[in-house]
Length: 206
Image (tube, rainbow, N blue to C red; front, side, top):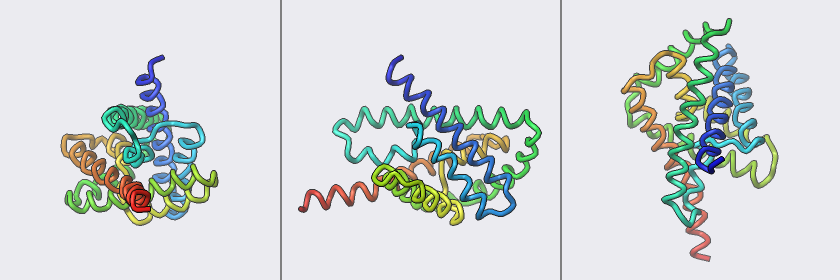
């Protein structure tokens, strides 16, 4: 199996994991509990070495060959989209397909927002995603995942992969939704790279 295909499959798995976390969030009336349980998706990803765009993009800063890594990130983004699509399609044939109504409401809030707001909220999400993944890598403790992920959800920050799932399940995956996802992706990317850039600059100055 080629490395690109392996990456793509790992990305599909990550997309499905985020989809499952999103299902939990949509199911819960208590949003605090829903936000905490959403983290099961990211925990599944880091525990099994799956490829999530928002968990990988921050590390582009420390790559020797940034072109190859950016190419890999494009594969991961696409795989995440496929994974969330598969998850949304499967759930639509189940008895909890009524979650589509909740997803529609969530999607309407996001798609009625302006792009600058979406971009800013996505930057903050990117920062927290990097802190979550790097914190887990360094300490191996899941608590940092639960803290960071639940924080970005409760604050209303924008996560491009989770929103892929919401838009697809809601039947709102239009050109407008794709534009919004790309803006979220840009924001998540910038946010994810901020701390690594600061750390790299500190190393250069020491």
